[in-house]
Every structure is written in structure tokens, then in C-alpha cells.
Image (cartoon, rainbow, N blue to C red):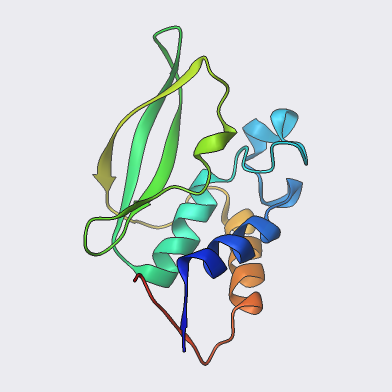
Length: 131
């Protein structure tokens, strides 16, 4: 049996916490906005599960760059972004570009924690299914 996207989404959202949040977003993270600061580590964990491409777009407020937002482009061309709702209306995410995955230079602890939670919640005998 394969994982469904709905199952992966449920498990991933349940695994988010202040301890998996990007440090610079921690002041804005709350249980009311649990997706805040989770985009980078979430995109990496989903990349581990499904492959595909990592996407990155600029986040702008009043036309000024403030950060980057990360999400996934699955094999077959489906974009998957579990953290888009983290943004306030004045935070605008621009178009994405494919980013090559390299060594993790920051947020390694947050990534490892989220990875362990998500993979621990999914049965190891099952494989991901995009369809």
C-alpha cells in the first residue's frame, strides 16, 4: 500500500512545532499559525519522500524582499506547498525557481527533527504515491 498525499500532509502538519521552525520566524510562530517558518524543512522532508524538485520564490512586503519561501515540484509537474498559508495578506510570494539541493548549512537540527517525526509516523514498509 502507498502513502497518499493526504496522509503525508496530515502527518507532516502534525509534526510541526516551535522546535522545527526557522529561528528568524519563531517570534511569529504560534499554534494558530503552525506553518510559519516550516517551509524549508518541510520542502526537504517532502523531497526525501517524493523526489522531484525544490522550488524557491521571493517573499516581498510592500515590494521589498524579506525572505524566501520553499515548496516542492513533484515528478509529473504537480506543485506541492503545505506551508503557503503561513503568510499574511501583505506578504507576497513571487514565482518559484528550481533550486538544486546541496548540503544543509542551517536548520539542520530542525530538519532532522521534522524528518524523524514524519518518517516515524509513516510505516517504513510503504512507499509514497503521488496519484
